Length: 238
Ligand SMILES: Nc1ncnc2c1ncn2[C@@H]1O[C@H](COP(=O)(O)OP(=O)(O)OP(=O)(O)O)[C@@H](O)[C@H]1O
Image (cartoon, rainbow, N blue to C red; front, side, top):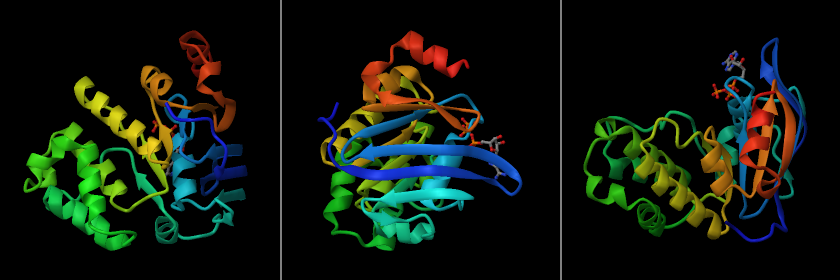
């Protein structure tokens, strides 16, 4: 768990978004403080990934603003958000399957050029399981290993804001524990984390703040300590 939040890192104000005529998000307001872990929860299809895609620039909102530190990034293309230090590990542990683990890390590192080669070493320290696998093709990794590589690829871009979509989905418990440790250590380094998480236990262990979305609207947001298992379950069953 991280220290008491002070500095706003990301602010989302009155955000509306969707796909063509299908409206998905309505009046989303969110403030995330530097070095904290903000967790987004909600049932399938309520708009969690759509929110992350809007923050990373893959979807243009129909209304509202997104502010990163003090800059309005609402209309910045995704690659410029990456250059600002916003890194995204999308759902489904996306990696370059034909490339080795080492090549995956080098390509991500070279593409962004936001720091020296020590970033690769630091990412591997976060995920020691990847070290003996550096020469293995990413397409041959297990789901858990691939998820760790997907997060490591985001880390080598030297993010100030790391966005993770369901990093524990379908992953075996011992690897989930390693991912939790890596997320906590990353936040302790001062990197802000925005995380969509389906498992309540994981969210209650990791998060500083929890936001629950239902049918495209925020139905709860606040410190993790405000929620119990029972109250969170009740919110998610709305
Ligand atoms: N590319 C798309 N085009 C049209 N509709 C989409 C698209 N992607 C998602 N949707 C719809 O938008 C709504 C929200 O989807 P989204 O993926 O954001 O939900 P989610 O909360 O992340 O769900 P899950 O937990 O299943 O990933 C759903 O009704 C979904 O069918």
